[in-house]
Amino acid sequence: MMRAFLALAPLALITASAQAASSTVMLKSASGPAGTAVLTDAPKGLLIHIEASGLTPGWHAIHIHEKGDCSDAAFKMAGAHVHAMTPAVHGLLNPAANDQGDLPNIYAAADGSAKADLFTATASLSGAIGAKLLDADGSAIVIHAKPDDYTTQPIGGAGDRVVCGIVK
Image (cartoon, rainbow, N blue to C red; front, side, top):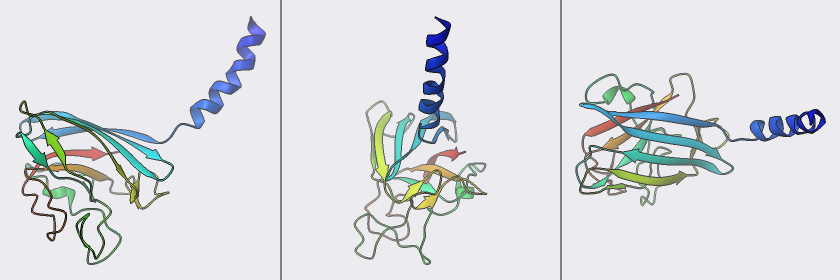
């Protein structure tokens, strides 16, 4: 029995080290906890699993912001979207390109809950693909009050920031 365990131990170490970088983000609104986001580096970008609550029913913009700071009630300390170009160009449907923080909208059900899997090829935790989210000042996941129209500058008409979570 002991030999079988010793033979499997190196395999367990190889499997654990091959797992992708991941970060669980605690989301909050002005009134308290608002769910989680799990960010996982993928071979060609970043997979984001969102489970949010307390939203108004309907569509909401969600973006990756440049600073890991959700300390103020309006979540303005999270800064602008992560971006590579200056000036940043916003919008998934903008013919001039989009910034690295742009994501598809999410939908909140009648009870205010939203669950979605999103993917971006323009950002990663490690920086291997696009914007590095785990840099010196971190980054944040921000959900807005309104949907993103994917073209209007600077944030697609998304309105107030209603949920924020620090990526660390």
